[in-house]
Image (cartoon, rainbow, N blue to C red):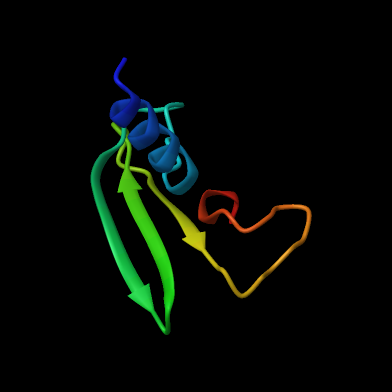
Length: 68
């Protein structure tokens, strides 16, 4: 693996969170008053969501977005 690719993977790991427990379809992101909300649907047409709320700071989580 090249140094640039290794660096890129390190960066992406800090900002991306993957959900692999189901097969999700139709991922969509929205922003509401500065808060990012991600929606997706599974094969059984259940809708799931997750919220990136950076206003809920926690020293134990650190400064990386993926932890919120």
